[in-house]
Length: 191
View 1: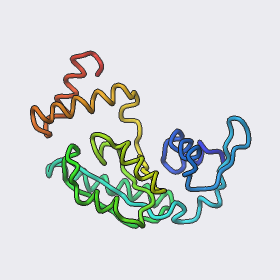
View 2 (view 1 turned 45 degrees about the horizontal axis):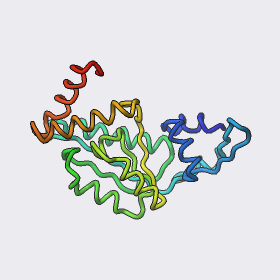
View 3 (view 1 turned 120 degrees about the vertical axis):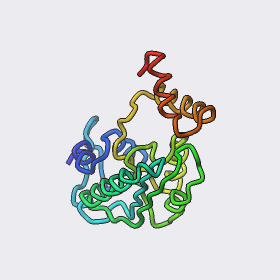
View 4 (view 1 turned 90 degrees about the horizontal axis):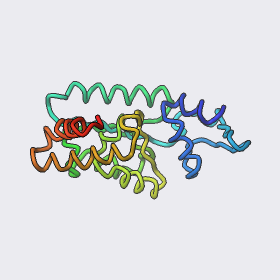
């Protein structure tokens, strides 16, 4: 099976799968068989727990979103089950994405059995500097799996949203920061 087909079957982005292949962190054996063709050993992928233990993490910002928190956990669990991964930890919490002091996220990241941290959207793990967490995980032979990587494709726009969200959080409080950042982008003609 080629790498793109494998990635889609696992529910991850083909770009992410290629990056894992390049970095040597792809969870299944694969080899380059041509300038543009990478083949994945599908027998290795069918074994449950083929990427080690996964940790699922879901987060919402307020108690009013508790129902969404439960739905996030259900979607993450369904993905892991369908992909045949062994779930070793599930953490969900109600906390601000701007605040780095989240007990359950810290507990998940500290668990040595978790070889892959799975989130639905990157911003569930944090609003800013998620790339630093991803780099730290990678340095420890672990990785971050983002199921829906397509929230904001353009890096410049994403960076502007992060900066505006941070500034708005300081000025107006974290609850309305995202809406005010969105409004500022729309006023600037980028939304």
